[in-house]
Image (cartoon, rainbow, N blue to C red; front, side, top):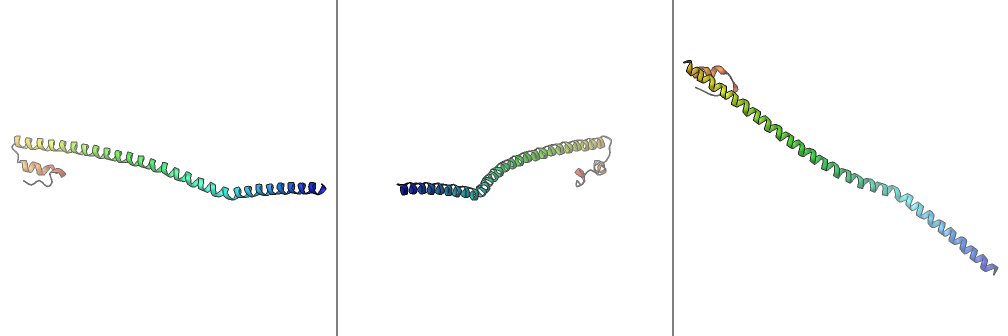
Amino acid sequence: MANLDRKNDLEHEFKKHEQRIEEISLQREFEIKAPFDYQLTLLDQEDEDLGIAYGEVELDRDEAWLDMTNRLEELREDTVTALDREVTEIENALWRAVADHKDPCKVLMAIRLDIVKDIGC
């Protein structure tokens, strides 16, 4: 009977030590894996951040494109308006030259604007 109690006590102690060894093993495994899991989490987060950043870049690109095309259209309209005004002024100067009995060709050459520099009489 004493041997049986001693055997049971030893088995109980053995199981306690075995359980403690298993707990230590699991803790060590967790401590070893934790940095790698953290790195994987960081990589996933970085991928997500890159996706968000890429979406913002596309929005910025589209806004910049729209702004640039609007500005170019405004520039074109302003340029056309300015050239129309110059053409009107040139036409008026030529009509005045005709009305004043002056040579329109000489008046045209005297204007010295880029718009008329390649016009020959």
